[in-house]
Image (cartoon, rainbow, N blue to C red):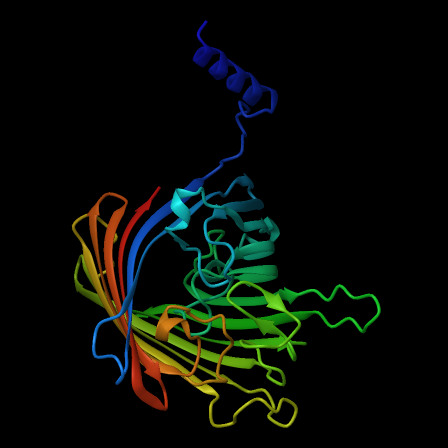
Length: 378
């Protein structure tokens, strides 16, 4: 036999030895996506009389397996590029064609007991934020975040989607672990709670909800683009705390049978006490996002258009909100984002997004960002 035939025989034998030929074998559910992005950034200031842009070609790759093990038990493991930043999975093309690193992006256990009709998920591990919490858009949480900790969900399916009716989430997520054995243990973590309702009135679908996110023992920590550290420098300032209250809602319908529309919004503010955390500016606690989307580009030949206006004051939310706005700044910004997507062929979309942002109290510098994407899902 040829070498190839020997390899096939070996794999078949190994699968049989592991029991994969059993009629009750695990349903593995492989999923992945590849995104190629061209990105151009330009800072428009009074001093710039010529165009000086930063242009990058970038790739995001994610591939994972999500086994359905039994009726009550599932799991997920995903690897991805760009694991050095909490808010990005992009890998920029550079380094003279050197190979790129991959990282563990998700790894979790999902137990959904049948005595509760599968309506409750107990999730342990590291999972995509939008499947962990009830997420409307990226005002509070960047879409690339994968939370680490424990989650109790009601009203979400095993894929993380909200069912009709009431949804609720409670979670505990570790920011950092204090390894010192000589000082009082004060690990930094987030406690989250959410409640939402998804329903329909006449021909309009809607979702409305609220959340509360308490950052515990955050004082003195710093979060840079690549790590959490005890020495204070930039992102989480000393004396700063976040007890964030969020309200979110959306309403939508259909213009035609294949052309839906949706209006959505988020409002979040920081309720931490100024008396206890002196770095908080009482006048800079609020943030909001409003948007409109027409179309969903789910099938070949379909398209979608969207527009959003965002305002985030300096101490309103933590620095793990969307990192694409305002030249990579996380807070103290306002501006708009517009996007378009076209589903070219099955499982492949083309997209373009434009950001126009500046500081809230300083419009002398405007950050322009253009992104062109090709995305393939499999």
